[in-house]
Image (tube, rainbow, N blue to C red; front, top):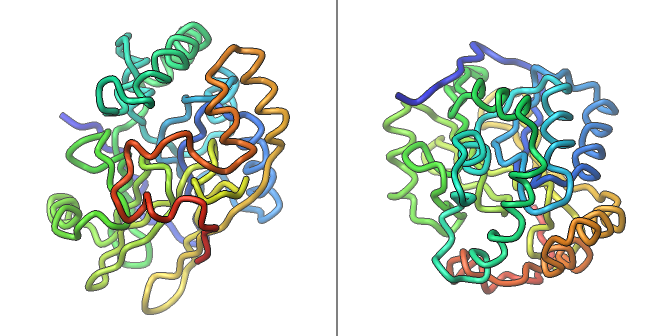
Length: 274
């Protein structure tokens, strides 16, 4: 049975993010932003995949744990926790993403400590809370499949069952690597994006989201920040991790669009604006 953590009712601004991807430099930068805006830890939620492509999986897990924020399991945490031999990202077999995962995932397995794995066993698959009269559910890919890729262009008919099954008006999701929102009939699919890798838009920015209190329609904002990508790049080279992923940190372009639908593929290199 799925493990769901209930936070009860939350109020005030909420900071949402996902996809740390073992990028300690980006995580430290986001922490500074949260402190600058005086957002308390119980108002910060991560959509999972603390571990991923970059060089500091153990450092990132311990940072999130010590920070004390809320997080759910991403597919990478589930695979590491369960001692499985692949990242569980649902990449097509023999795709470039699959090929690279056979390099970074074993690196992460060696780096993550037993203490961190024990902590992962305590994490929920989903988080639920009420936000000014709206029920919210936090998922990684979707409620039905941790590794499901859901994008802005994904038909609403594929998103709707998530709202129906959880009786939610807001779904907060991660996994796909791109920030977006999709709103239909006062139901909101919100993806804050990821902080560990740029959003394939030709810039070095990474993304998070703020929910704000307010009457009427939900108030939300996509926000971006820069981090020390030179240091993150150097750390990846030291770890002999895929240089193609390291280069994404400085180019803002993904090595490939294997996971992307046609709409999002056509938007590669176009600077995001909300």
